[in-house]
Length: 397
Image (tube, rainbow, N blue to C red; front, side, top):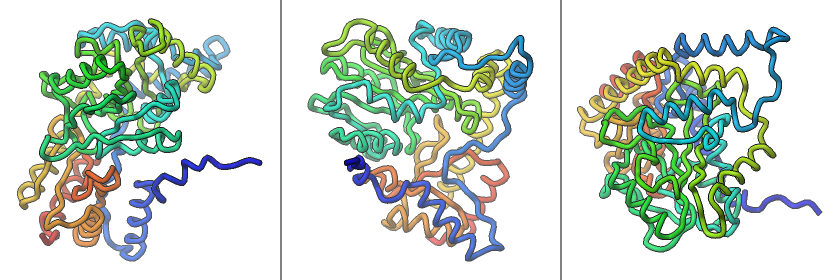
């Protein structure tokens, strides 16, 4: 008899962003003449830069000729792109072999799948609040989960666990809080992982938003990290590939855990990808190569600056009316404490009803997110300014 995976019953009844969409739609239908200003979901809005469009068009053109047509590519990714990424890391003082870099259709997929190469009984440590995919993917696999509290008192940077855990999911710059780990804080986790033979799954998808040169943009900037950490990365937020879909995962050959040999975990992930993944789009990978070109880097850097200027507008505007605001300096997310002890969903409703602004309730990211909302800088400057002015003018605190 076929049975469902009962672990799915342990998930929240509604996916966070689906519930936001439902509430927003209901408000819009009840108020058809009102403009709704969306600062909720972190979806990029600006057009792809010219260098990237040129790269994508090249990918399409190659498919139009029998001489340059390509079907299935290497599941691990285009050799040229893997080498280009290794060069990109080298400029940041991180030495990686192309064979340690695996191209994917985005960091979210790999974040959900990466734990599958580790023992089913692994104990997983996840920060709270947390990006839902880390939590939900481990709930559905039936793993035991413990939480690392990221509180206002510790600047939303959790401490390493006190007891032995097997897998640790970290995200810096953090989604949703906008907090960024410094080298000392990240080293504490690396030292912990080495001591307890644990593996850190480090999501660096927002690393390009770090402007402070003293903050690490890759976990491999920390000595010893290649022996204990896997890094997830993406072009989604750094180059607007949210719909194009392209990312990568770094699995160093030096990564060794109990019962494994040097290079074995790298080989197992390779086996997983070649078995269950046909590789990223060859068109998207041409776009990725364009992102990494000198002109692509210059153009995407300007786009990142645009979004961070939006973040500054949100942060300054909300602080001007007395709200307590975090993030928005080295990350595109702004984490706002709800006033008057309102719950996250109460403040979501208040912003929507009074200012017609859509936010993301912090409670959707975990119990420690209760009492906060997340705002995103990924809008047009025009809409960001409208939203902030509407909040300043209409929100009754």
